[in-house]
Length: 140
Image (cartoon, rainbow, N blue to C red; front, side, top):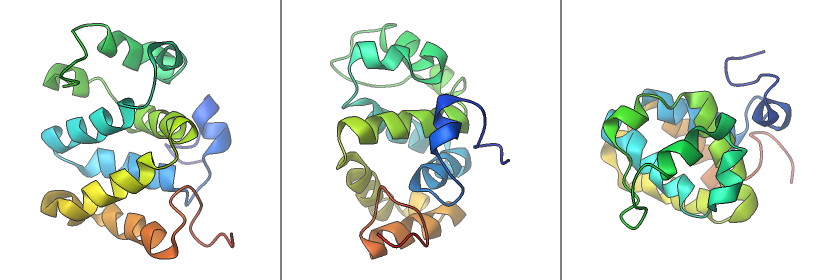
């Protein structure tokens, strides 16, 4: 079992090679400001009540700290967010808005700092196969 596959709700659904695993690795490899952009994008489609069930309520706590109009995550909050939390967030965001993963893939393509990270190559494979919610090697 990897660091991103656990007994957590996300761990039960996220398998090795999933786009969600790649997103968690991307978050782990990214610099602080890029991490914030990843989290901000994934938070957009998720309502306040749904956030309570993600990552032990971590994102709900962050969401309720400040007005949400600007949807900016403070650096001190990014430091609290682990890759496993982002994995859960990505799963929840995709359930609510399936196109969110396409938008994330586009964000990776548009950012030289993100597209140069090792996990970006795996993410690009999902985009090439047209299966952003799928698994590498899965025949959908």
